[in-house]
Length: 294
Image (cartoon, rainbow, N blue to C red):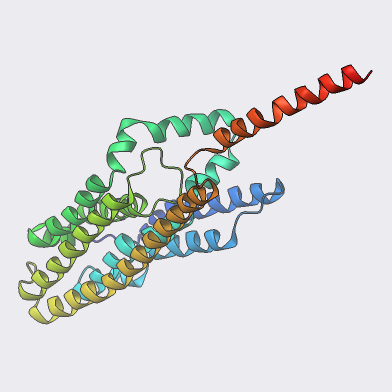
């Protein structure tokens, strides 16, 4: 039995069951966006579009003809790998779901969610190094061990691996180009170094697959899948790099504007205090003059 077998009779198709989490995520996001519209704070359309595209990309790797073909075709499998683990995460991150949820739920629930985001497990799993190990380490374990062959013959192993690729990809993307509130956000230098390391490891893995196919995969299929992984993966990584550079540029611009606004190096509060030290005696002298004049 494979993941995409359909039940007979009045049974529910496995595709329908697998589609439920994606449908819920999409509907919940739309409801929260509508709440913002009703409150007079329209949610940006491009974030809704990014979230929708990300959900569709992720769902395509679990259900539908491409997902079904991935069980016997290594190239189709690599397409699902790219969609679920690499294409969907940046789109979902750009959808800013945590920000939307925090704006839409009540104050008590928002505080509980904020505490969860500040907890040590959240800090650990969203750290760039941890997220990088989860995503690139999972890929190497999948293709450099007999795990890929096990994945093709077991429903649970297949779902577990695809889910891991999806979650690890999201955590890694959120750590490198965070859009939502991140109490433990890493610096740009660390994120850049981690991104470079992951790029190198991803490229080496693709070349390894090209030269040494996984168990049960022909050399022709392995070469086609490895080329797809290498070149299509580079396109997605390039998008992440562009977003990272844009975020770094904006942050540097804000810091520069602050510095230019106060050439002496002092803060606005210091400037205000200096101004008061000059004007206060003048006001006092003016009041004394008016008293004497009377």
